[in-house]
Length: 547
Image (cartoon, rainbow, N blue to C red):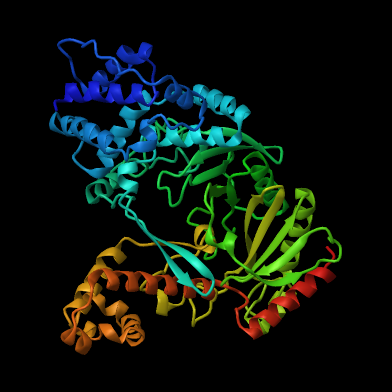
């Protein structure tokens, strides 16, 4: 396929996905030719093959369709191939450098030419919303995929599975869709003038931004304006899609993360607007928060997280809120669930719990609200440690708000955090336990894929794992695995070769068990009898608390 042919193929793709209309065909092609420095000999009369009216309607309004809508059936491989030809052309003529960062910047520029303007997207979204909230998000999510903001051909590389634990089924992912850092781009960025626009990856000014070597292009992102708690917010999707319809709700202002009464109110208002979505917030403190603490934002989507399915460990009652059903969840982390019909009453109780928790200390549990001693906590001197990770959802007409208690204290023994995965688990998960992991979905590093394949090969070969330097970090865990599964020990393998597929399943299951332990480490009140007594002491404090 020549570059010229690829342009026409891209136009046909855009027409088929209704990114553009037939009347936009020549205009859009000429913009692409200009960006690619191409001069076609002629423009063929080659409109998109007629789309079914139903498919056309579904794209315009966001309605669900069974008419062969390409965005529902394609994995993006056709688009990947077309863009690959155009990127190779741009590289060959010296238009761009041949590196991942440069190629991503340029193909985003090309797709930005074909992505509808923000005003058109907003109008279509709210037109679809009048039919139903789900139709609106169906349209918007499909646009994010068709415009290549969500790169489906990269997302499909991710590995996903489930693991059975004492807390139920947990979800595990190894993320392979984020491109590796390009050494050439890193080196080139060092010579560039420092740029502070946009201020961060979540600022609304990213919409339409051309990007730079150390900041992704965003010509094909679109934002939907929302009003939450009387404030200006925006809805967008995550380009990495850790789960179905992974959305981000971001403040119009570049202000730091903050958990307060307004947070609970916004989360519950959002699930009023979009009852088929979950929405939660990372905590507002380092170690227990997410990777971006400088811009207030929430994450959610159309996905049933494992924590939503968790059982009840202890039912609770709060005397001033008799209409609210409350419980401690049977979950590795410390979670209070509030259920009720009135979001304002749930917000009020959640605010009381947060206020009480901000000041709460329990030396027996290793919890100090401030500083590192009872004295500093009592006088509220030193760094504040207590916060909450909140998650809101709807269950038909009932609102649910989960409050996950967090504490970010560190000690010499646990320099990365007392309530953080301890060093024995770092071979699987070292990073902060943020909102998504809290809800039971592990996001594990790409290195694990190679390491687990090597572990499987080592076991199948009957080799002693201790003799393989690349597996040194996993050796203690692997030894425990072989204790639990003696059929995979070297002496057993020498007698009866193992089934590779079964061994892969065993390794994945064992990774899931490690993840459940990771969450236990992050829990402030442990799941044993002593931990639950400590938890109930805190519940008593909430009932007695007066601001």
